[in-house]
Length: 212
Image (cartoon, rainbow, N blue to C red; front, side, top):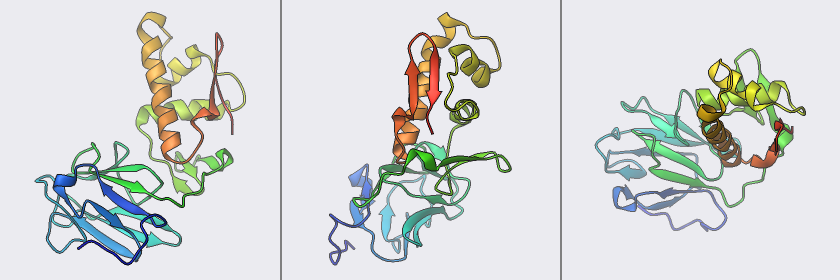
């Protein structure tokens, strides 16, 4: 059932990437907990065989909405990465249900751009945090960001980045394009989490600098 009591221009929303599979196709968030799944009793019903009857929930925790997988068979994904725990949603997050490709988008029209200074690294858990929330990264994104973070404010050469990513010497003919793709992927991830993708600067002929 589509909600009508909230002004969708000022509240967070879940919007279907494939409207023909999701009912309703857009859903304004204004309460505490919403169920997502294939079952008819869910707030958002997703008609896809990879989606469990109760697949995931979106819960209001403090002032932010959090996505939680409910033990689904095929998993819940955010921005292409499978969730291992709860995920605090950020504006433009892409939510996959049963597969990594997006099934839903999360939009927060009142989101505030996070300052780059809130990016931190927890050595104990070996994870990056944004304002205390874990940043979901692919293994390659994590290795590259950790290398840049360890040398923040100084130039990391292509050779050192290649060693951090692949554990071997940099081979220009083989690695130039792959390294560019890895950096662009990391920048996109940071932008999706509300950070400035430009915090990773390219120094032509030298390498890359992380500004935090």
